[in-house]
Length: 358
Image 1: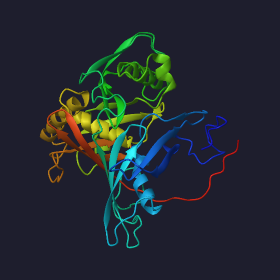
Image 2: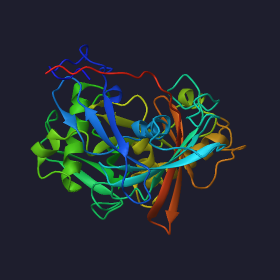
Image 3: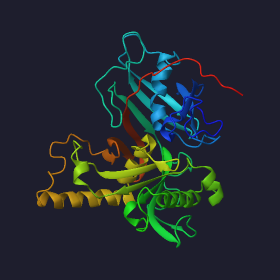
Image 4: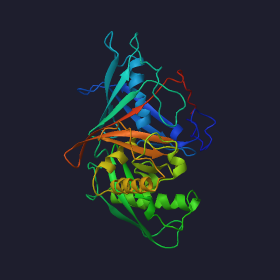
């Protein structure tokens, strides 16, 4: 990938010099009963000689099904238009089921009209179902047992005084620290180095509270787990104009210490699950957004929410930096997540040999 000698540009490799373009999936046939294929996800650090195998990546996982079909690991029945591929992620021990389109020759059908935010070209819709996603690394949906926690940073890296934020520590598809953006220290300027260090301080403390790290030093050494995101109920009118439907919640997610251009697919799954669970900071943000939107409608500044929406009750619509993403959340009872379903696209960019020099 080009990170061997600590080059942040990854010139001597095929990495894209960002955390979102420095990922690897190692795919193989599976001998597990009821599983077609399994894969291991690797997050290659940018500018550092390090590979993180903790957690999963939903966007990378989206390409595993098409790859398995094209490489003959999975074979479609002649005449079959769609195939369900059961995938086991070795990082988390969880199962994904991908529903992909098949062409007349039995290969993945790439060409289609489905579009996702952040990608300019269209493709066929790939349905990715995260089956029983709770407790992917901690063994529990809510590792602390609470729907909301106060996360206190006693010795901040960049601030002079201790501070606390309100957050939900949740593990669905991947562990995430979901922070109420309105509880962040007001002295931090968004996007500044001080702000980035403060967010990382919160993530490290959250890692300890979730049982994913023994101490701050341990948490600092594994930046990929848990991940962290900030959520808000606030609506900016200029941003809202680009949305076809009013989102339920807005998110700003982080990736390896930097702002994510959109949101991780596993992050969308985790956040949507939190939105559906009463008592979480995400559930409160969604409730506040609905109240705010109704007020704006009364003032004549907004259209009635979802006037012509065909959204199912299970669907949570998330706004992020590149657009929006719908996530279906299917619950068992009030507080158990049966599965979360998202849609992606994928296409083959290149194939061949990547040379490795010792």
